[in-house]
Structures are given as structure tokens and as C-alpha cells.
Image (cartoon, one colour):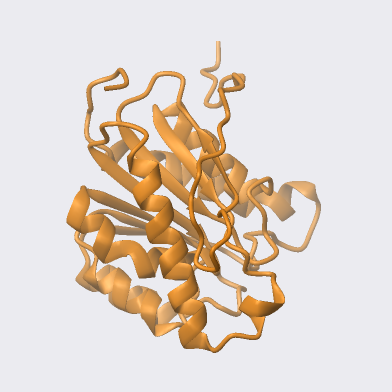
Length: 239
């Protein structure tokens, strides 16, 4: 019979961790321990109006957990008036502080041997802010989902990253800058990219149902192959 790529999801023991946020209140989060852990941790950051329950984030979490990776969903309060009215410099400091706080608490949940930072849109600013800290601690893999190339911090982080990194982009996304991605791919041999033809900032296209979501499905298949190549063969079992 045909091999199932996505197995039926088993509901894990979902936890909420005590993570202090930039503004002094607890940072909302969900910690998803993998059923068969391999001692890697992934930290996921959503978009501004794109939650962890929406397709790109949901399927990313599923692909990671299938591979034995614990997942920590962080939810910085980016829709608040205080964040929206802050300067760009203050917003970047906010996102960096939340991400580093989440990284520290997340890594305390196990004896991890590697970390994956995954972000969608504004979440890629969080990745950029925490990259140096993450790489100083553990081997680090980056998943840039519709990254904000127009923010220089994203481009700088991609050029500085030491480990594997994946870019998922839509060719019709106004935040997509082809020349920037071409430069990154030319200079970073561990970087890979999937560009969904005609897809918008959510990797969705105009057309019927199959066409509309084809970019998402193809992007997730590309991510699955990338993860299988990027993650070393670790020992199983929580340590």
C-alpha cells in the first residue's frame, strides 16, 4: 500500500511553561513534547495575523514532532498597542528578548543536542535576534517561512548563520526579494529554498482548492526532505 507521510496525530501532554516576557508578564506558549524524542528542540514563532493553528505553522509542527523533536510555540504580544506603537528598534529589542527568554526556558526542558528556530513573517525577526545566542549554545537549524527580507536584520542573520537553513517563499509575496535570496543561496552552501510560483505571503494562490493550497503542500514536502537531510541521526529517548 501507499506509504503514509502523515501518521494519525497522537495528542501529546501539552504544557505551558513559565517564560517571562519583555514587558514583564508571562509569555504565552505551548510546549509539545515529542512521543519518541531525539533530544532536539524547535521553537516556533507565528506571524502577526497568522497563528500557530494556521496551515504553515500547524504542518511545520507536525513535521518536526514526527521526527522526534520537542516543539515550543511562542506567542509574543505583537498585536498589542504597546508593540505596534513602539519604534522599529524597540520592536526588535522586544522580539529578541522574548525569543531569548523562550530559548532559555525551552532548553531547560531536556538535555538537548540541537535547536531549530522556525518563524513565519514577523517571527523571522525573532529568529534573527536570537540566532547568535542559539548558535553559542547548540548546533542550530533555521526555518525561515515567508521571511521579511526588507528588514536588514533578517538578511544579516541569514548571512551569518553557521548551520543549515531553509527558506519558504511565495513568488507573488510583496515581502519576497529574489535578489536577496539569490545572494544568500550563493554564499551559504547549507541554505536551501522553495519558491511557490504565484503564491502570496501565506503560500496560497488564486484558483481552485488544489491550486490555492498547492504551494503549501509542496513547501511542506520540501521542508520534510530538508529536515531529513539537516538533522543528524541522533539517539532516541529523553535524557
